[in-house]
Image (cartoon, rainbow, N blue to C red; front, side):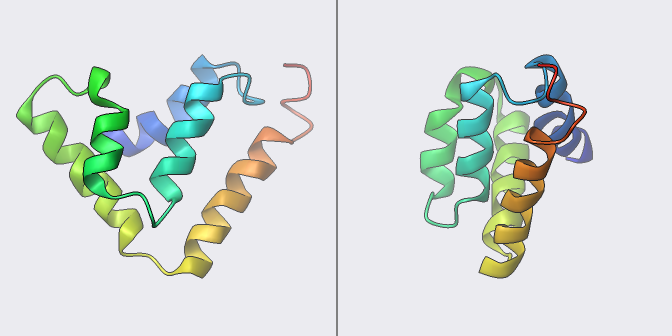
Length: 93
């Protein structure tokens, strides 16, 4: 579970050249943070990356963690992503 969190929030931005540059990554993060996106909708959006039951369970638990958060916390998470994408270290990308 922790490895999935690291992958979704840290490794993928590096793969997509940080400063976003990867619209699919931005969409996945937005759907992860959005409390109106259900677990089923989220799974259908990333179904090409879910190859077995254990991965599906991990994704469900990961999304549920965000669903359990307050709107303030979710807004802070989105703010953090915006800061990362707009940081001086990502302007080169």
